[in-house]
Length: 338
Image (cartoon, rainbow, N blue to C red; front, side, top):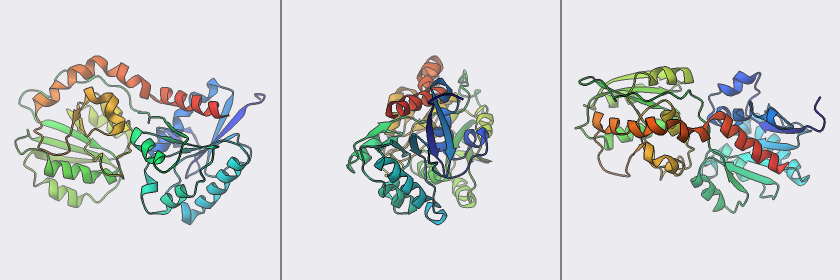
């Protein structure tokens, strides 16, 4: 037994049974943030416990995503009680706030709005936009820690595609982001674009309406659908030429997104087309920015032009976003509070 070992308790909306439950969780806030500590926590005299039930003996409480069923399950009441008890006792509480729930109506927004503004409660966000949003609400103790990426780094192809062959494009993400893909394809991709096959990796959703719409686009030759998994992501990426990650930096529901989808695409060696979220600014030289308006012509030449810089700098630009690096950032920050 390690003497005087300090304990960190990380609250999750489920009970993990093993390490795999964290590393392969569909919740990005668990897989890319909470699980980042697993391999580095042994570097300091601390232990970490993941649970949906606040333990009585933790030195520091980290509040992960509460989950949409928080009221029905009683989790809101339980977690708020623990947060208030910790803060009133002078023990630090860290709220890992990865989505802009305070701007939305619903049980999760209600939960976050009831967290007291205390000197012992610290908020961690994944993007500058989210930090600014919390600051405007009067919250003062705000820190930024990026999301990690959890795919192997794969070298970009030498060429975007073989001359005369069809382009292949990848889109991946939560089904709530599919609306931005549809809007991009229907409003901004020029009909003069080269035809490409579209590969979509996401959780379960009703695909019929989207497929019906995509069939009307002359530049989309075929559509392939895959269930969400990192294995599918890695496998499909080997056979595509580019990644499409459209979004809306002006939509308060998504403007505060972290950097993970972009770093994942770049780690997979894919030239990427995406909007300029606040979290993406540091990588602005390595992806093609989608403007707020105007048509975009997708072509082999455009895609190929992004490959040399990515090939030359891929490892150095991604090293700060690995699971180990992000885990150490978390560990350093949490230890500083204990």
